Length: 227
Image (cartoon, helix red, strand yellow):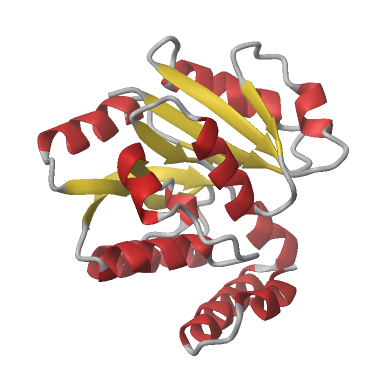
């Protein structure tokens, strides 16, 4: 099974090459491909990229739209949706392929959440998020969701809404009775948003958005809270 790593980006020029250097080691060619989908009209992230093997796709802004466009161009058997501020373990390809090859009833999975900050409040957030995703089998995008491409195409991909597209897709998969698996190994995401906004404010806002989404508030209204 070959893996297509799909990374939606938006104004990540300052950090993109450090991210790609790590990604190149974990997902070497020719068995894997790296697809970056830029939602910025300026294309500043693409202009900064030094790694020649990266497949570059321009897109309108919106993470769901960007990931769908990347998936449409992907050649791999497995689609891995990765954020540009996230690091996966060095054996991620083996973990993913062994999981999906070993259990043909699975349509995909995700990693456990890791946060690159040792402060106790963030470790509690990490632990609670992992407990929730194991209980509900509904991981979020910062857990690096991966799906078999043929299933992703059949299910219709991400709904192109401005926020909560990961939750919507995972909930749809669960309602169809299909199985995913949460790996114990971690997808380590940056704590930059918590640092910028403050841990309490950022966390309470995220909880509020999820609650309102479950109560039926439209995603376009929720997006205003996330900015």
